[in-house]
Length: 362
Image (cartoon, rainbow, N blue to C red; front, side, top):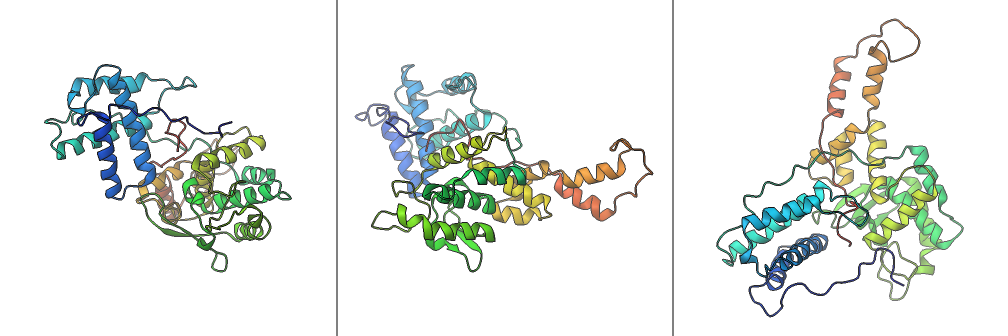
């Protein structure tokens, strides 16, 4: 029986014997990405998007990239807008944007290789990508409820508790947790080394004492029962002694959230949102949260300032005449320092999300 998240491979798209066909040029393009040190995740997603476009073109008698015109590219953009997933929902504008960006990159590569005379995607007007708030953020008590679901008397439950504690403590991405080695955790210094995070960048982040204790318990009581020789040093192992895939982690964490019966849905990235929001509400400077999350710029981190409204609530309660049921004397106005701190906390920017439901399977 196929595992959860398994996607049955399709037959190769295009004609492998056509030197000017989609299949041949797609392979060359993807190889060029690898030579330029693009991540495996990026290469896989580009393949997924190009495959979808090539099959759509083939259904309309377009077998080669040089046959694609601007009108065809615009028609494909409309197709993405009207496309519906198996659950009946449309593709998000983030996903539509990503697919069109992949096409533009592909045709720019063809232009550099002199395979086409004109780039049919150069004049495409990409959809505007909205700045979405995190879909689900847990309170501290709700996060604790999820953690308590794991049966720590069981080998797998002990492993799962250690993973959930690590997610909550560090806010790392699911791919980053799956790539951890036993040598990346430094319990004495209270840090964990994340190798080749997003953008192939390494970073060191703090690891809370509680998470370190649970990882230590897992290393002593559970991992030796899961490891299969030869030991490759992978920190968190599946029941088969293998490294976790991104989809497997998503399904596992999603099941724990559902079992906690919080009335909220989410998976790995929800713990990332929760960690950032809790730290911000605790008074952490947004620049430190940026370093924790591994964001290249502050723009992606500032999304959490729109979720954490603690400072705004305090000013509202102190100054708005109807903020409380009981009538009261006017409060002292906030100081210039308070206003400056609030200004920092309410800037509007976006965040990344690698748990998008309509992203390609990994």
